[in-house]
Image 1 (cartoon, rainbow, N blue to C red):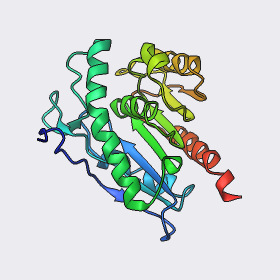
Image 2 (image 1 turned 135 degrees about the vertical axis):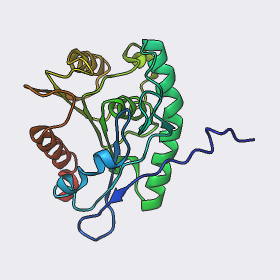
Image 3 (image 1 turned 180 degrees about the vertical axis):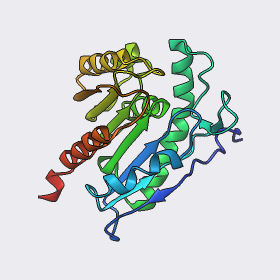
Length: 226
């Protein structure tokens, strides 16, 4: 017997490959609280110049947002204790894991071809999921987010993909201190992490931050282009 949650199927806008050829990479864009897949698929044309053979997919989160009259959420943030964040991320992880497996099967790709990009709550999900997948994805890019359950990583980490974290020093939603906390926790379990602070930026993504992501993606897949 399947539960209602098991029957949820994630989906959202997709673009690419820009080259028109066979997909060689899969970039999954995970939006923040109260948004939807359209919010981040706008990154596809820019990042697609670096990865012209990539498919970009931006699934809507599984639940209607319970803090706004529009948009979706990966899990509720009405209670933000460390335990509540962990439980919420764990519940959503099973759905995201299944979606990732289905998308890779759709395009005939493997985890080594997969990149997760998140914003805010989407960053929470990207990190929480990537570090616990059986096979390491190519990399994780996280904007304006935080690491959920960092104190549990020593016991729970399975994969160690390289990570790029970008955070504005004027973020009024997720404290900029979350950047250094995440970086320290990841480094403590031997994850290669690059942490970038954007001066004057609030809770958002700016052009330099997108350029950092493009450079990170280029480096991730440079060896395969030789």
